[in-house]
Image 1: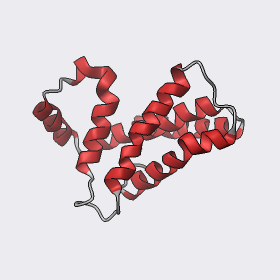
Image 2: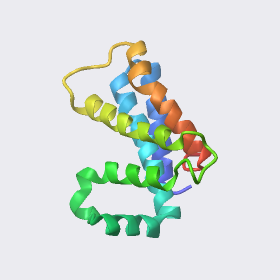
Image 3: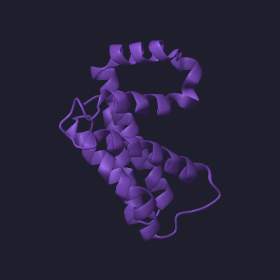
Image 4: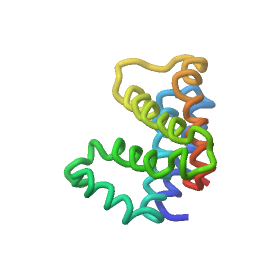
Length: 143
């Protein structure tokens, strides 16, 4: 396991703690980064050249587009693992939830609101998170 995967595991542990202690906004952020860091690690270890080609073909210069890097990485994963090259039904739609999770993370980190109730945390974030996490596990992106 590399350092980024270790950081991802730390984020998941913190997310579980925060969820159990009703710090839902922090849990959203940490759960999101757990997934995101695993995706980065997977690309670096397995698809680095493919990702570089993807960026070149789209005219993306990553260092200049850091704020967009989340969208770029997620779109790359979605395009790389689609319904025709995996045995996971609806994989593209399931991975597409990552965009929803990113928006939830942005709201949790920056909005002047707070997730107060478990039911809101579950319906607005955790249900989609579970779908994405399970899908990434099936693709061996998350262990």
